[in-house]
Length: 461
Figure 1 (cartoon, rainbow, N blue to C red):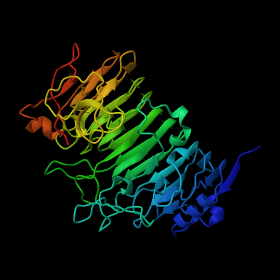
Figure 2 (cartoon, helix red, strand yellow; figure 1 turned 90 degrees about the vertical axis):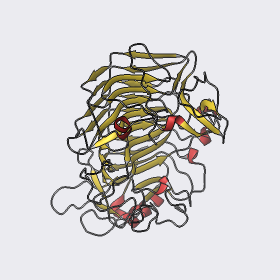
Figure 3 (cartoon, helix red, strand yellow; figure 1 turned 120 degrees about the horizontal axis):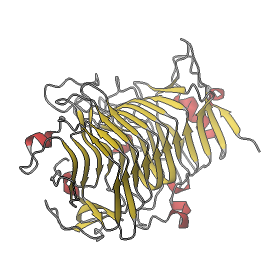
């Protein structure tokens, strides 16, 4: 039985005119049935304007569907989707939380591929004159009633794509095979180009046995936060940062992606077993561009990162050393951020009811749900993780481990650290509990590691 293709243009979308296309595309998504492919028209020439997105596209508005694909008619010439000045919130969301009637874990085998999304950062704002993301003089929000009710809610940021598939946060074993209705599997974002994202993230992603591969992300958020430094985004906002890829889940593959000028973290993984973060390229270009980290594992979600691979990645900071730069090239552990002090959640490992500069290694001790805890990433006894064959050039700290409870085997081999340099890292210059630091190759604290510099780096918030 062949693949059934549905042409979005048949529902009234027209990439050759100057009219918004969201209503027509949403109608096509509503008509799409399990197993079908929605096709956007590729085009060339001066008359091709692309699809103008004035309302967030929700892949699911009502009940669950699975085995869906969104793609272009010519993979070698991806169709363009362009955010308009009227768009509130993300360009694409997996589902509407105000209207979707089902568990997100029922959304499986969904693929987005061969599309080009332009987030319109030059005319979209994350926070208006009141400096609050709330839909007043800014582009936070949603066209769906009840979708966005609390100002600042990240679900409603003017971002790129949000694919928040289902996971079971109450299962620290992360056994998605035994409870398939609670876990989204088979999600795939492949060969997308995402550009000019305003804030939040260019690509948010949660699921199990799923993949983010072969994508290019170019420019997300505004990094400039030093007085006197020229901004890169003409909207004038100085603190609305954005990740390139924001992911969590189990058995995720994040490979062969290129992330350029993300401004918070280029690729951040919030926890889960079996993640493969390999063969990616992260770049900050010359000028006032930078990021807090190139690749980071910050386990605010499940602390157990057994099987983690961070191998054969290339992180390069070419930015101005006073107004930009990547602060940490590759960072594993939670303690760079406020010493890892958070309210505990299911699957968190750490030191309960404390927040110390030099806490004892928790040795797998779980946090109490709902109570203060100093979180750590966690590698259990008998498990392995690898940091191998990476190349980092020009960050202030090229490799940083801080807040990693290593009970198993962390394999570190073949990594290159080249030309660490000063950046606009405020805490490094002005002090973190009296500690300052200059350019460093390899830093490990909580725990210390042989041959690595033991340096406290823990007061970003």
